[in-house]
Every structure is written in C-alpha cells, then in structure tokens.
Image (cartoon, rainbow, N blue to C red; front, side, top):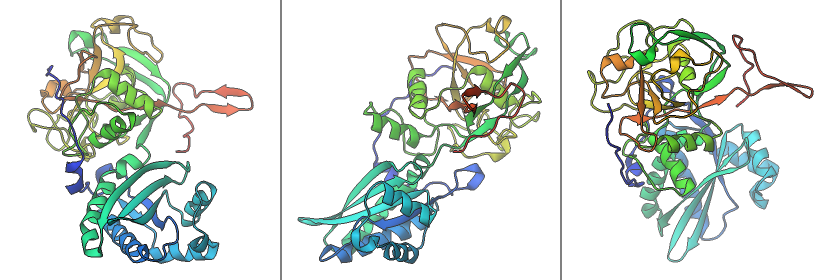
Length: 407
C-alpha cells in the first residue's frame, strides 16, 4: 500500500492550454457571477486596445463555462449613472457598492497601459463580499490587436482554470448524530464495533485539487510539490503536516477518523458511501477499474447521500488522528480525536491502486506523517459556528441539526 512520494516540480505552462470540466456538472462548483470593469477611464492611445482587451477577455471567459458575466452594456450604463465612468472607481467602498449593484461575486478590473515598447494588461480580481483583492494577473499584449488576441485567450483559459480557487470551498453540512464505528468482519484494527457521538461539522464535498494546493504553495512561498498537468485531479504527494497546514490556512482542519467514517457511512452505517452495493467503475476509482485518479467531481453515482464525492477510492485521504491498532478498545464515545501520540497518521478511503477490500468505509490504513505518497491526498473539515444568544455561546447538542451559518 505504501508508495514512495511522488514529488514533481510544477509550473504554470500546462494550465494555459487547459479548459476545466463544465461548471456545475456532477456537483462541480457552479459558474461564478462576475463583471469585467475598466479600472479607470481610458483615453488617448490606450483606449482602443483597452476596449479590445475588455471585449475579448469577456467573450473568452463566458465561453469557458466557468463564469457568468454581466452584460457589458449593463456595466457601462451603471458606471454612467453613478458617475464612475468619468471619475474612476476607488478601492474599497466604491468597489463593494458596484459589486452589490451588479449582483456579482467577483469584479474583474482590467487596466491597459502602454509601457514601451508594448501594451500590458493587468486584471485585478476583487471579492465583493470581503472587498479583498484575491489575485492579480498580468500579460503583455503587443502593439496591435491582432498581436493581443492570443495572450488574451491564454489569460482567459488560465482564469477559467483558477475559477474553483476563486470560489468559496464547496462544503457539506454533516448533521450531528450517533453512529457506529468499526466492523466485526474487518481487520483487527477495525474492532471492536463501538458507538460514537459527534457534533455537527462541515466537510469538503471534493478532495483538494492540484490547482488549489498549487496556488496555496505559491501564495505561501513554499517549495512547489505536485503535478498540475490536470488541475482538477486530487492533489497528492504532500506530507500530513503540509495537508494540515493547507487546511489551517483556509480556516479549516483535517477531519478526525470518526468524522470521516461517520460522513462516509451515513446515519444508517452502510458499508460504502453510496450504500450496500459492491464497488464498480460507475461508483469508485480503484485497482480493478483504473490506473490513475479521476477529477474530483466525477462519479456522481458513488457519492454519499449528502453529496460528498470519492470517499471510496480515487486517492486515500489523510485524517487528523494518530493511528493505533488497538485504539477502538478504549476510545472516548464523544467526538473522539485519536491517540495523543503515535508513529503513523491514519489514512482513509482507499485509492486508485487499492483492492476492493480497502474501499469499505470502515477500512483503516496509516502512513508516515513526514512523507507524502502518490496515492494519498486529503480534504478539509471545519466546525459549525456556535449559536450566540446574548453573551452566552451555545453549540448544537449531538444528535440535532445545527443552524447553518451563512457562507
């Protein structure tokens, strides 16, 4: 089961020629609502190139399927009505107001400048809800519009590939409840069968993708590890510590073993995420059906009843707990978090190279936390926000549905 880490240097060249899977298909994130807005009034020599760049970029983004764009005429009319077409848009309050009026999630501000000997385009992406600049992309356009066409198309493809990174993480609320862990017919470390009680929590609908993990590495100034030749396949090759650090950076955490198994088995305690039927190539990516992982949003027939993908096969997943073969003999009933220490971290779910027996929701595995592996990835979890009444904080009791916080 244990494979030496696959560590690859990664670059961005491959992204430019890739188009993401159709947004909204098989549970993949829905297209982002965006508006392409001129950063400031264009006059003189750059005006013609600015108009061409804005129009071409808008058209290519709409064609990608990753974005739903507000019509250019509506944006321009609103800028005229608010006086921003002449005065320009100031950062902060004006941006937020514009985004709310246009009813979009992101604003893409385009700025074309002539910097001898060519035109340059800068796109600044602002999240309307937070008012924060999420990222800045730049490209050279050349001197003429015919020279600008190709770099604009390339930039649009890159932005389309990054759409899942720009979107809020797709998470599923797992309601609090009581469930059974372990299997009386499984291996020794799956026994004895016992009852656990868990608070509500959120779990990523999809495994963390290569492009999401790559973007975090770049932003954090870390060594680039992994493979982004297909950005929507699951990230692999990271150590347990790197997976935990990624989740923390997103305001999340790794799920515990108990949470992972509870989410995979459901309240009825079925043996596979989808139910009792044996795995096949419509439900899981494993040794009998595949030689490499699939994109994270695929195989809708194999999701849990709540819509969590690839909890059996594709890539195995790091979880929070230390692994111990006898932990089930004395683990706590309420929200167990694993042993206090150990030599290995628990890994769950089986992978594309796993036999069918390792796809059972109760199956446990383990790996050295200091080393990554080509078949191990991860997904994140987070706590449900407490309910605040006056000066008192109330957390939903086990067994009851928690109030969903807004995203």
